[in-house]
Length: 129
Image (cartoon, rainbow, N blue to C red):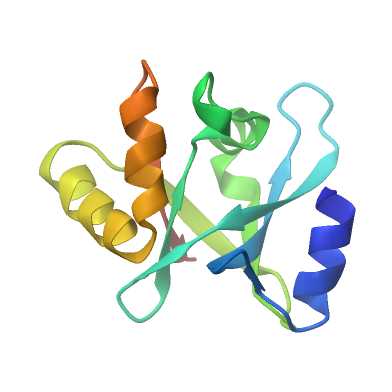
């Protein structure tokens, strides 16, 4: 499923189920192998993007662990574009709350998912390096 979505994004269709989607490039925390994962995003200013590590509600997704293990080797690829290196920053406190409001305004279903989960979803700002 990831490979199919990545092909769609590379083909210039960066929207799925009403959400903007990018390809998140990370490196496996244990394997050291390149990983490409389609992830929903919301704009944060002119050049940064916000992503949510929801992982289906029960646990942080693998891409979050990879991003945390190798933050210097993260890139994003937007529809029809090339991979651009980014710096990930996991948001906390008031910064997270402001970002969460922006995210849930764009995608209200995420607030519903969060309410059903026992854990707080990490919110990560991806800024160009």
